[in-house]
Structure formats: C-alpha cells, structure tokens
Image 1 (cartoon, protein in one colour):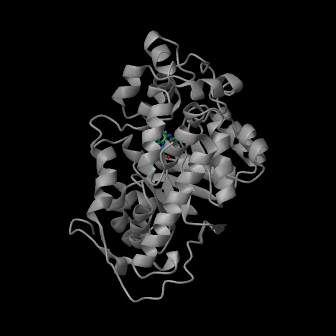
Image 2 (cartoon, rainbow, N blue to C red; image 1 turned 45 degrees about the vertical axis):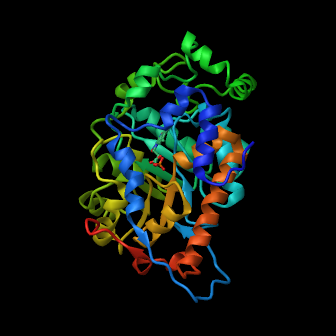
Image 3 (cartoon, helix red, strand yellow; image 1 turned 135 degrees about the vertical axis):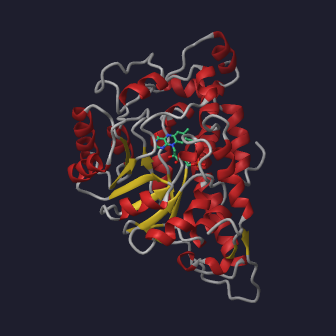
Length: 383
Ligand code: FNR
C-alpha cells in the first residue's frame, strides 16, 4: 500500500475500497454543489503569516471543548450511515476518537445504535439529534442517550427538509444497499467491505429500527427523511428538548449572526457554525467565511465551533485563528474509515494533528489556544 501522508491519500484509497453508492453519499453536496466546493476553496484563500526566530519548543495542541479536556480542538462530526462505509463503522470511529482523546459524535441516522456504541466503547461520547415529528420517539431517544452516558447532545438545526443530492437519488441509496446488477458489479471488487458486512449484524439504522414506524431494511433514506423530520421546528421546540435533556447542549447548523444571537441567548454550551458540509442550502456562504461575523456577534457569549470544509491541520489552524474554539471534521475521517477502518480514522487524526502542530511552529506559535488574527492574512470579503 502506498504511504498515506495526507487526507487526500485516504480519500483515494476510500474511493477504491468503499461501494460507489456510499462513496458518492459522502462525497457530494446538494444540487449544484457550489457550497460543498466553496467550503474548501475559501480555506485556501486565507493566507498564513510566516514567522521566524521564535522558540518553537514545548508546543501543545491540548485544549478544551465545553469544559472537557481534549488532545486537540478537533471533534468527529456526526455522519449518517457511517456503518455502511465500513462494517461497525460508528464503533470503530468512536474507539479511534476515544484513544486519541477527542470527542466522537454519533448521528441519529447511524447504523450502530447508541447502545452498541456505549457497550463497545465504554467511554462517554456525544449524541447528535435530529428533531423528529414523533414526540414519543424523541423522548425515548433522549432517554436512551442519557442511559448511554452521552456527555453532550448536539442538536442539528439545518435539516428539517432534505437538500437534494442528485447522486443519492440516481444510486438508489439505501441501507443496506439493494442488490441490483450495477451494485453487484461494483461490490465484486470491494471484497473487504463485503466480508465486513457479512460478519456483522449491524446493517440497518440502529437508533431508528424498531422505534419509528415504516423504517425497515428496504426503506429509501430520502422518503423516510421527508416523512419524519419536523418542519415545524422553532425555538420553543428547541427549548423543550433542552429542558428534556438537561445536560450539555450544542446547537449545530448555525450559519448566520442572527441565528447565532438566538442560540447564544438560549443557554447553549456551544454552537457549531456549519452548513452541513454543503449538503443542505446550495448557494449558502461557506462556514469559514461566515465565521468572523458570527464571532463578532456572539464570540463573548458562547463557545463557537466550526465545521464544513476542513481537510487539513492548516484548515483547523485558520478556523481557530479566526475565532473558533474548536473544529469538527466529517468527510476527513470518513475517508480514513472507508479506506482502513479504525486505523484509518486514527491516521486521519494523526495527519491533522501533525499538520496543525508543524503549521503552528512555522507561524511562530506554541499554544493552540493562543492562535489569532496575528497569524493570518484575511481576504477583504471576510469580515
Ligand atoms: C453529514 N452530516 C451530518 N450532520 C448531522 O448533524 N447528522 C448527520 O446524520 C449527518 N450526516 C452526514 C452524512 C455525511 C455523509 C456527511 C458528509 C455529513 C454533516 C456533518 O456532521 C458535518 O456538518 C459535515 O460533514 C462537515 O463538513 P465536512 O467536514 O465533511 O466538509
């Protein structure tokens, strides 16, 4: 196997090993994919200031998130159907995160259930919740998250209706995949994936199957989504969920200063500036470009995290220097998982930490918490 030296290498290997349907599911944005692309290209427009003759010994990437100590200010974002990228994918990603010392966020739409992950990992993790219409389901799943010892609830606010991803419709995305001729031909070369799937029983939506009506093995993701996600989500409903949960709360999917003000006044422990990795509002401004405005609006009131477009430690550094307290990665670790399972997630985290560490040194910084605008040349259209 060629040496894996960057996140892009993991992506190349992932493409070779994962079924095309699931690769496309991760590697796509909604509609024209303009926001999906700009999330990454806007990072490239921010330049770093090179400094020399600064003592670079004793560097640290250690930080905190919502009061919890972390090896670096990077979390694994919730990703639906992770257990289809690789058998037991959620358990493998959660183990890699635990051993590395960063948070793992389990998606509502995961294949392994809350209980599966809690039992296998034996350590706290975060749980991401989509607000469903079914009140009973909502109450039950919050209770399950509590029993699974989840140490934060990440409430996603930017997916009450699904932004269309053309590839998923064309591929007939489902979990597990329907074995049509094109799928079988594709799987013929993806033997590692096939063996993993034969060995595990976890092939359905573990948090949903048996709890919500109409979601079985053959359900199509998009029709179920359209039916269950609550289009009437408003701040009152969010407040009810906050009170029901009663623990640490992170609001995900904020990409506008007005929404950030609402969220900050609401008692959330953190907000995640995010456009869902370009999978929802196509044409939305990239998260990194919205970050300065949001930091200016509420940076002194609430902890601000960011995701969407991070593919390197340099990207993490830029987000932190622009005022984010932490960054979350989605695709960057999914590439690793689909390429090499648990070892691939660990590799993705190592790559990002090494890049962050070396880039800090070359910017003349020793402490990840001290990064700031002094490290950047910011394009004029960023605030
Ligand atoms: C996601 N994301 C997501 N978010 C969420 O709150 N719940 C979910 O179930 C999912 N599912 C999901 C699936 C896939 C395949 C992707 C790529 C993303 C969004 C995710 O948490 C995060 O916001 C983005 O992935 C961040 O962008 P990058 O890092 O992938 O560019």
